[in-house]
Length: 121
Image 1 (cartoon, one colour):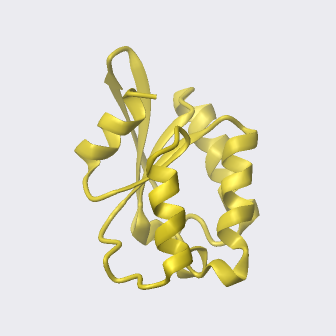
Image 2 (cartoon, rainbow, N blue to C red):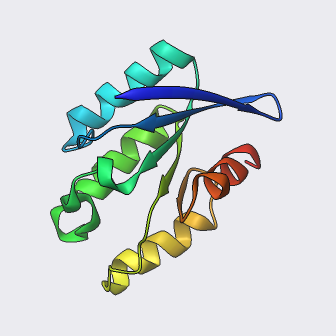
Image 3 (cartoon, helix red, strand yellow):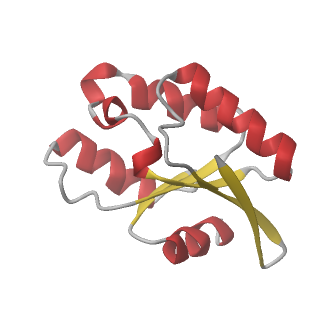
């Protein structure tokens, strides 16, 4: 795992890159939150969707809800980058739509979009 700090508008954002899946369950999400906070002091994180288990995107597993609750409890704002067009689930699309209109979680295509979203909230 490689964590790069990006400063934009005096806001620190942690760009996390990894070849491996970093979030596979609730505990691994908590570990990531703590690692990023310890190494960068940032509460804003950019992740590629490939670093998150596919079970996250299957809402029937309830994993997304549990993980998102941890992000909110720890006041962490997250932007997930990638191609989300492969997902056809209406509930997942609704979650992405609502998240993108909120202030805590964003599903975007590019790192630039992620930075823009995380610095505007």
